[in-house]
Image 1 (cartoon, helix red, strand yellow):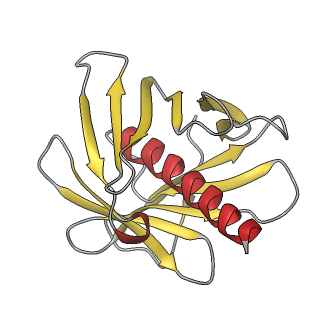
Image 2: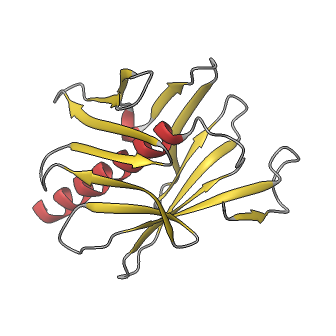
Image 3: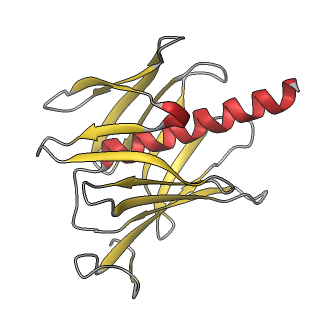
Length: 180
């Protein structure tokens, strides 16, 4: 059962939204669970504390992500299921990424507000299709993902990629704050 909620401010094509909560079960580990209505639907585990490699599963798709390059960073991915997709994303300024779906539609991932940690994937019409909102409390809840059109099933890679990039950005910001 997918948790849906009506949103009166959404467009007519956006009648119901799926809400995924990101939960961190252990404090000192970099493992995350994706949950809908408290039931696990996926996970993300990092290879180590300082390694930019992660693997995980969301719904029925498994992915591996890792970062390559220092001066020109790329995020590479590989699917563990058929059709065994493999590719890379070039990171833009402030972790913006463009992605073209298998159907040929272009999407862009960017931060929506500079003073808050909220991010979104936008479609060609500049409408948000997936939004990410951080939870800044000291609880185990880490974030909330809202898929604005719950009938879309091709968004597992962008959701997985976006959470990986948000964690990389948070790690980078913590490093900068600690060094100054």
